[in-house]
Length: 274
Image (tube, rainbow, N blue to C red):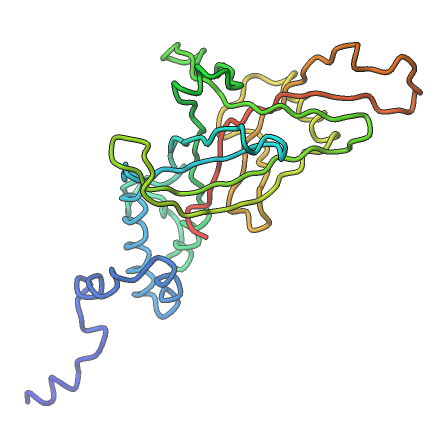
C-alpha cells in the first residue's frame, strides 16, 4: 500500500513553497527559460520575478548614473545620478482587478511584464548647480503642486554649415553606493553608445517644442542609444539664437546656415526585463 502511494508521487506533487525555495537562488536571466517548461513553472517564475522587481525599486543603495557628452566635452561634463520615477503598470497587486495581468491570458503574462519600461530623470547636485553647469528649471514642476524649481540637464548642440549631424556619447551604469551618500562601491555598465542628432530631426523637434504645451516624462519621442533598445533618452529640443557674426557676409541661397540648439535631457527609459 505504501509502495503504491509512493509511485504516485512526482515532481508536481511538491507544494509551491518548495518550488519557490528551489528557484529563488536562480538569477532572473536563468529563470526566464524555465518559464517555458509548463504552465505551473510559468506562474512560479512570473511571481518570483514580479516581486523581485518590486523589491529592486526600493533598494536605496543602488543608483543609476548617466554620462552624456559631446566627444569634445568628455572630460568636463559631470556624471549625473538619476532619480527613479516609477514603472507604469507595475504594482504590488499581483492578481485581481487593477493588477498588471488583469484580462491577460496566463501564457501571455510574462510577455506583458517584459513590455514594461522604467523611467528615470537625471538630477543636478547642489555642487553642479554652483559650478555653472548648463541647467534650466523644469517648467512641468513650476506649474505643478510643489512650485519649486527642479533643474533639467541640458546639452548644447552646434552644427556648422557643412555638418549634417552632431553626436552625443551616452554611458549608463548601475552603481552601488554607501547608504546615504554618493560614494561608489561598485559599478556595472548597462550601455555605452553614441546618439546622432541629425539637423532635420533637431529642426522638426524644435518646431514641436515651440508649438506644443510643456511635455511630461511619458510623452514625446524616445531616442534609443543602442540597437537592442536597452536605454532610451527622452529629449526636448530648443533653438538657440546664433549671433549674426557667425554667419558669412555672403551666403548662397542653397547653402545651409549654422544652427545651435539646447537639448534638454528630460528622462531615461529602460526595459524592465531584457
